[in-house]
Length: 470
Image (cartoon, rainbow, N blue to C red; front, side, top):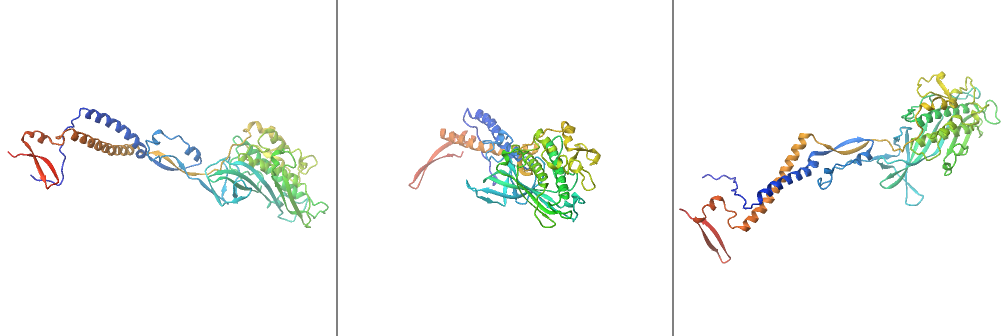
């Protein structure tokens, strides 16, 4: 008979009464168990997504079969990569207000007051904490040689403000201070595109803050265009200056209505190079308070004094009772000439009117009663830096792909279990009977078989069975 290279095993039934039920029941149990074990690694994969809520993505409840012991690698957890915030980056908060530039990043060394500057810090949507305005700097620059009263507010068009605010965020290395820089130039009369969202129903405080900010900025420029230097003649006017309003440790303890809410440094230079003082500082103070209030709202700090968080403070900001320029006899009270257009400083548009027409404007001190009831609630929310984060989340494969992968994995596992179980059973059978490994043909011819003892050298004796020929 031809003999192939390949062979097949000769089988016989296991001589155990318990073997069949144990095999059937154990096979069913192992099939279920192996299916659960193979469900996650073979039925799911990690899909890459972008999200602006990494905290919610990472803390999303994990399905039970993705945990140990069913997922032995424990590799189906949602993970997100932090964003690297560097000095010079442009960003904005989740309250969708102002645009910021990162001015500096620093970290305190232990309990000491000394800090270390950092070029960047990893950030994973941590809440901005203890945000406060550090200073508001108004830089005055005149663009022409016009002198009061024939000077217009646009003569000071190149002027602008730089405001710095500082926040603390948690990082892997501990608390980190981030200083944010905001530039403001009020070029347009009623243009408010320097904030992302000023919807008057969902962001009412931001809506009021931007309208007041523009109005006070125009009033600052108007006063600069109209005031003369003390003791000077008609041709002596201001052409450069700076008003620097500082936050102090005592500012949080004061009322925002106080005139000394900020500490002030200033200087003004005139056409004759003399230093002088001007009522512009009062108007600049009110502008700085509005800027501080708007930034605090945008960065989610409701604990500091603020003009835009409650109705009483808002009415104070709209009327400015301690602003000399807006009281009877003041330059901004009720005065209209070709060069002093007081409506730019004293009126704002209705929330639903985007035409910008002067006849549709409402006086500041009348605006609260005119449309406050139709607006949303004043307030703010905790803020984070708005960004897109790269995350990996578990995603189910297509149904047929998942089923085929699980079935193939189950077959491998069941085959391994069967092989181990059969080896154990064969070992038990051979220990219980000398003929356990005999084939059926041999068992049927035991009466024709004799035992032959052979001695190989002087080492040991071996017994074999041989089938005698007929």
